[in-house]
Amino acid sequence: MQGTVQAVLFDVDDTLIDYASAEHDGIVSYLRSLGVEGDLNAAAARFGELQAFHFNRFLAGRTDYVGQARSLAADMMAWMKAPSAPDPYRWFLGYRERYEASLRLFPDVLDGLASLGNVPLGIVTNSDTAFSRVKLQRVGLLSRFRCVVGVDAAGASKPHPRIFHTGCAALGYPPAVTAYVGDNKLGDAAAADEAGLLGVWVNRSGADEDGVTDLRQLAAVLKLAEVSRFS
Image 1 (cartoon, rainbow, N blue to C red):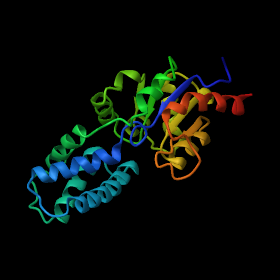
Image 2 (image 1 turned 135 degrees about the horizontal axis):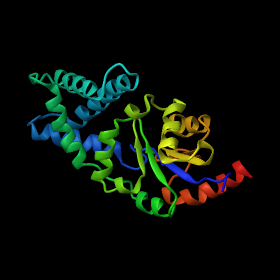
Image 3 (image 1 turned 90 degrees about the vertical axis):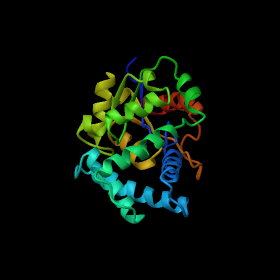
Image 4 (image 1 turned 90 degrees about the horizontal axis):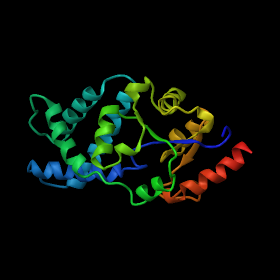
């Protein structure tokens, strides 16, 4: 019925999948496999900084996914004073294999999705569409979503409204009856609101009293949100 939440789009990293832990565990495992010694936690922290820098270049359209990965690997090897590989992208793929093996769902995800029943679900992510599908397949979630929309498919990244609207179109529902669930209060929830969806912030840190702290609360929160927004 018009005026109710009829479909839900989700972010992936640190909303459904524990990205931060997978990145840390993946790079530590990979460096250990290469025989790297020393403070691997410090190395993981530096890798995270470089990852954020180069991924933001990708989001800004200054490079493609492979280009940002190649630059990330080259900078990380330079930081470690390691011999440069002929193709840093091969180094990155070695890391990515360990990263994918470290992917885990947050413990509330399966029950949270199940609580939504037959509501159509989709993905909108600030990542590459194909790689996002690989990650979702790896954790057993891909079949639960009708669509996966990344920045390459939308031609824009969050917080731009276009990526949300592309997700709504792919799912087959207008923004006014679609909720968007993500872990970034501004870039996910507030941006979705600005785009005409119902933004729901997943407060994974629990640092304050706002947001949903457990996806098993989601069905109840959406019901309350329907009343406050559409009544």
